[in-house]
Structures are given as C-alpha cells and as structure tokens.
Length: 275
Image (cartoon, rainbow, N blue to C red; front, side):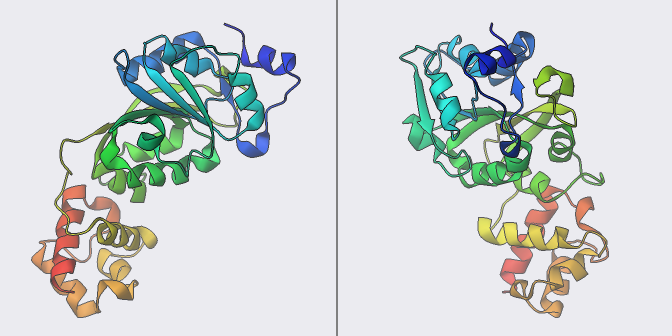
C-alpha cells in the first residue's frame, strides 16, 4: 500500500496542520481497527475524515458499503482514486451530517481517525444520533480515550464519560505511538470502541434535562455536587436541589466524578420531580 507521504508528494499536497491532519497508513493497525468494527458484507458504515483513503480500502475489503465523509476538497479528489461501487464520498463536515441518512440505513456503524480539535464536537454530534448508531470505533488522542473509558472516581472521569456512558459501553482497545502517523502528532493516540447498549444504562425523564444536570455537576469540579448543581438556576432553588439529592440517596457533599451513570440518572429523575 502506498504510504501517506508518497500519495501527498505525488499529488503535490501537504498536510493541513490547522485541520489536524495526521494520516495513518500502517496496514496492521488499519486491519485491527476494521476488525474491531466486525462488519458484515453489505453492512453500511460511515467513515469520518477518510483523508487519503487508507482505512477506506480496508473497510471496503470487508464487503461493507462505505460512506466516506470528508470536508477537505483535496482529500475528496484523492479518494477518487478508489474505484468501488460500494463507496460513496460525501464532501461535508463530519460534525454536522446525519450519518444514517447519508448511508440510507436505519442504523450504521461509524469509524474514523478524528482530528484532535474536533473530537468533542463529533462525539456530541454522535450522541444526538445515538439511536441510529450501532457502534463506533474512533482513533483519538490517548488522553481522551482514557477519559471516555474511565470509571467513577477516576480523575479523568468527566462530562462526556457520563453522557456517552448512558447509551454506550466504552472500551480502550489499544494505543498508537505518534510515530505511526504522518506527520506525527505531539502526543500518542488510542483506538476507542463505543458499543451501543440495548437500553440506556439509567432511566431518565428527559435527555436534555439529563445533559443539563451532568453539565452543571461537572462545571465546577472542586465544588460539592450540591454547590455545582445550585449554580444553574434552571435546575431549581437550592432547597429543591438538596431535597432531590436526599430523595435520590446521594450525599450532597459528594463530587461529580464519584457518581455513576445510574446515580446521575437518579439525580435527574429526582430533580425533574421537584420542578
């Protein structure tokens, strides 16, 4: 397989650093990423930021139907070198499109080597579409993968850990040293798998309200849960917040990073009952 460096030179291109372009061309790693998706022949998969198409080729080798979402016009042209009737290239921003609609399917698998600066927007966008995503395998900054797969009580456990944890099981599969990329990023990466749960990990009255509760809880990590929640007046007056925590069986002096997804669900339901 032609290396990213070679393809770029042949096409007279350079990586766009402002777009976070770090190309992965190692065949063994690409094969591992595709294997983690467990694609069936004919299954729809959406690839985010395919770049020069190295991972795209391995996805197509499984017999899957690939929809590649790429916003860089130079990369879109490069993807034109791949001839397959199972490949559809869409020139668009991966943080803005409807994955299942683009693929013409009820549910899709999603995969991609995510630019570091777009990882959070893409993950929040994925959450908005969680009902139509069966699983996702992403290459992200190692620190991000550790955060998203962290357990309650860990210093890396945070907002996205909980929000994703409501609908997905997160598992850090393996790490990738920076030297495997062209150009090499400043830090190491990791491959993260998100597997959709059959049902949400916790019962909530309203998804938007749940996100508001969790966001408020983590807005001031050094504060107690009670003081963090009371900083958002839309969650209710202090006395209602305290009563909600007590009815949910949660000590108001605990901090957000100690609560499980299930406990956050109990807090959300109690707060909703006191509104």
